[in-house]
Image: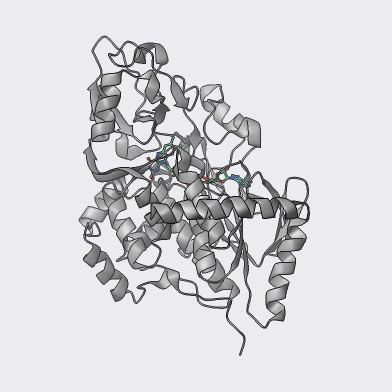
Length: 470
Ligand SMILES: Cc1cc2nc3c(=O)[nH]c(=O)nc-3n(C[C@H](O)[C@H](O)[C@H](O)COP(=O)(O)OP(=O)(O)OC[C@H]3O[C@@H](n4cnc5c(N)ncnc54)[C@H](O)[C@@H]3O)c2cc1C
């Protein structure tokens, strides 16, 4: 697998040279390409995905597999968005979702994550059978894979608006006024925000991985298309973990962390930890164990399972006397703020009020996690192609956890109480529901059985567009 990934990377470098050559005439090149296909008598579909986090990458991959020409727009210089700093997969119900995705025909990104895993099958407080991917090394692999699959990846390309034709989006306008045309669009821009929104909470930009000061604000495509999104300061929450530079920690601590993948360090009584659990986006970690201990995970850097911890207090703890943060840089003061809006959509992930727009990942509202972003991204990308090809949209059945979570959130957000919660396969309210409804399984065979029962085995790897018109 690793050999294959390295080969992808080499080919990517070559493609970069070619794309630099064409960069001055990117739009022209893109349109020319799809028109050529039409001339050859193919039903071609063009899907444009805005936002290159896990949701956008999954949407681009699914749309490409379904036979579309795909362009992926990302405002920063790297793909994966907040996936550049997370890393935890397969914990609790996320394993079920992983197995369902494989059974439904979307194993590709998971296979790369598997190859980039530093620790597999580990337990930490409240979480079982987790795996941790290497956040420092995974991005080039995903990018190379997408490019090799034929997805046009445009980084440092920030979407700033849309051109509409009635209730249809005609093109996305990117910085510099260029227009990227498509038949169908996916909004995977995560939590849209300007720095002003984050500052409202902490009084500062904590300099998180989204790097707004350098790459500009995050812009919601749905909002640009005139969709009225549900907004509320009460929904907003802080990211639930931060990263420390390993070299800044005691050697004995690093040695244990690298050996076991997890280290739990009791917080001494003389260190007064602030009550920072309350504000967590990741309610699956809002447990007492996380207030009494520092839980560290090895994702490349040392992932500290707390939204923030004042540096001067952290340095009082043995092993942390020289500690430094690397994400967010001001991790002693706060963390990134997310979940400021919900984009109204149905269970096929089509955005209400726009004929040709889907949403995925955090853009859908209150969904937390890489796995969750990959699930919704895959469905959104696949359905985008179905829409353009005139096929019925896929609404995953509720006896699949991957279908139930989408429908359940759509029901829950109708109440203010439901909007205060966050939803993830890995804990809190939704994992409890999975267990109650017997949706939680760690068995490959059971996930395959469910996919078969739904008549959807391998559905996401089937080609829908790009076939000859006969
Ligand atoms: C610190 C931290 C730790 C986390 N740890 C974990 C973990 O261990 N495990 C886990 O499962 N989840 C974790 N999460 C949550 C998880 O990362 C997210 O819920 C999930 O990855 C969201 O993916 P997304 O694609 O929806 O959004 P994002 O990751 O936010 O991606 C959105 C992308 O869209 C881009 N974008 C925004 N606006 C525009 C625009 N106008 N034009 C072009 N591009 C645009 C952004 O630059 C970004 O790259 C963590 C989150 C954080 C912040």
